Image (tube, rainbow, N blue to C red; front, side, top):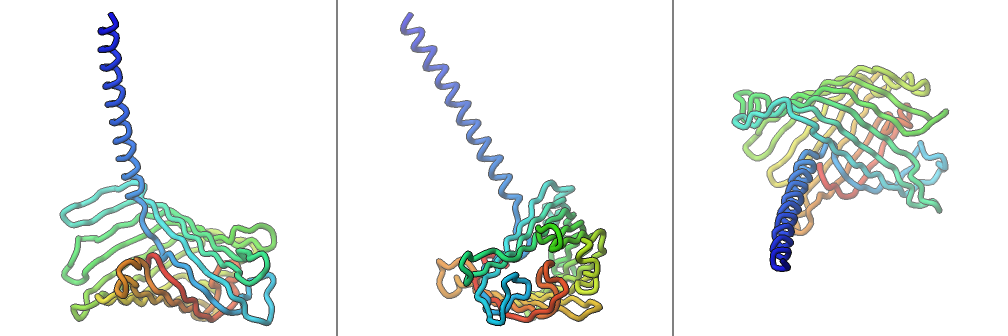
Length: 280
């Protein structure tokens, strides 16, 4: 009898262990699929700047040392279709981007300004496949985007927009890529405290990118609006070209124009930010 019970216990344990192993493998598979659908959306970086931030509540005549960092990702919820032969995908995505300004000199070292951006969009990657007769790559993105400073009351700023963006990429001189990406948008809703934001942010921008095979990348954004032109640039170079373990980029960015953040959408500013980028 004892022998029979022992055999039964051993069999039951073997089945249980097998089921647990199957569950573990299934969980690992699901986790792998979940994380594989996360993609970088806008550049992720951390930089330092020495200037007089107009949007700082404790702003003074002296320049302050502060940092600007940005986090950004998109999640591919589902694919409408994926063509393996053409390497082309039509997908539905959500995105989240946060830019934060951090005072490094004041006693409490506050995060004194934030811009939050979230949205949903349809993304058609590599329409027609790679190496088309007239362009190396062609993408289309269209969706709905919300921008806000996350505040309430008199300092509340937000705007909702519908947008449409295309991307064209060419191979030039057999040593670099040149990318042109125009974007247009229409305003769906605005806060009562930034009703004139269209005069500063305009209705579109032009993004240009040049990426050399040796690693250097120069990326610019230009906005034409009623109250002036806004220009920003982002220069990066992979540091693993200098030393292999450094898997990030040296970064220098420049901003000139109106509304670096939605909180100061109607204020002009010019300045450099230098630091490191984890994506670009």
